[in-house]
Image: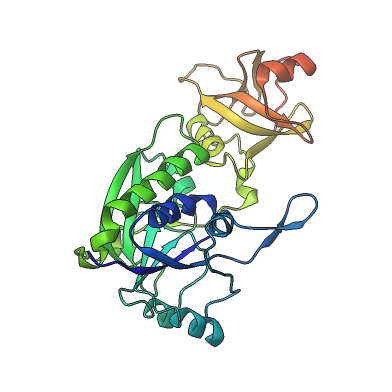
Length: 312
């Protein structure tokens, strides 16, 4: 095994376990690339990415170009003379010049079993689709969107109660594990071309998707609630106010024929809403300006009765 000079490119929390794997290996992380600091929170203050915070702790050189299409940014990266670039949820496109700069190219740690769920939101799209299995793919990057040759895959079960957050955390850890088992000889792993006919696209999440449509089935609505936790959080208008729905459960089929959108039950263990197919039981909600609370606590402060008036 030869020690490699590695550039790490990543931005969110998902990338941190992979960066830690490299920092704890025999290889040298010569630089970290991460997206520019963004304004966040009510104060709109500039906030470092999770990867930048880790790089600062480790005293690693940090680069934050707005784009890698810029000639100066490309020259700066080439001057690092890296053997390899590991990319994990970086968020910027890598042009040909950058892909070819490291001696062994650029390797991506992707949160799906490619070619399924290419794109920005593979974790949430897998949950929305009702997939029962996902995983991590190590991919040799090319100029396409997650189209490069597959170097290694590891599977991960999707549990019935998984949320976007819980599945994110398990896949982030798995990404680090897969990288750990591969990094020493990654340049010698056999590369397998993807079958484009099997590809599906995981488009970026939009806030508008968070609005629940009661015409949909209870099963699909439950998937939305789980997939959109912790962002953008499913929501609906209930009892004249907008509630964010943090947890919900699709109930077994029923013969109830109340109008779609009706609240047919208000108890401490849940608020039951009629959907296009089945009943969705709301378990944890949040009022505007409030904190996420159990339905039991919500009803203590805001008593309500079942109603045939549709909600939206």
